[in-house]
Image (cartoon, rainbow, N blue to C red; front, top):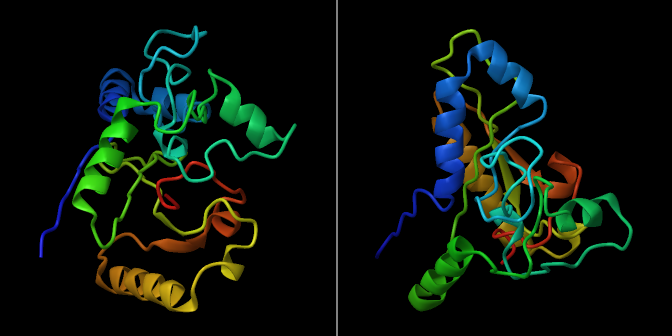
Amino acid sequence: TRIFFIPVLNPDGLIQVENFLKVNSVVEVEKKLKTFKSFKKNLSPTCKPKYDITSFENGVDLSHNFGFKWGNLEKNSLQEASYKNKCSENFQGASAFSEPETEALKKFILEENPKISVFFQTNLKDEIPNNNDDLNFSTNILFPFTFHNSPQKVIRPDDLQGFQKIVADMNANSVKNQFESGFAIDIIKSTIVGSPIDW
């Protein structure tokens, strides 16, 4: 059995977060997090940012850049406006796998053909605790199929039970965080297209 770990898919975003936390006080971070909840995007030059070149406005949200259901958006919806706006934090990119990061992961997965792939994405929560060494990260685990309004109708019951057992085991062994799990439509109140979870 071989297990592969890819610790960071978005080095641009990691550097953004590190720089953001270095130069800002906790009070400044709290203020900015009202607007900049995460640096999900890489730094592809997609738009002319209002703030600065390292603003979250520039780039592609890699979590919307995968090939399954990419661009399958309801016409004239808020989601379509957000995914297609080159300065939006949810910009999906010019095409599926348009970014070197997602293309590299696609190539790796197709070559290695793993039996299972697990994707983790961490986002800072809005609240910053008093102890600056203990930043809050979201602890949601989303099950497939994130693109679907009624995913429970398309997921296989055995798969769903397997996912639920994994999360239950994680929660039983977690000292600090308890993970909320379920479908995107229930947890974040939205569908996601171009998601690595579904691809």
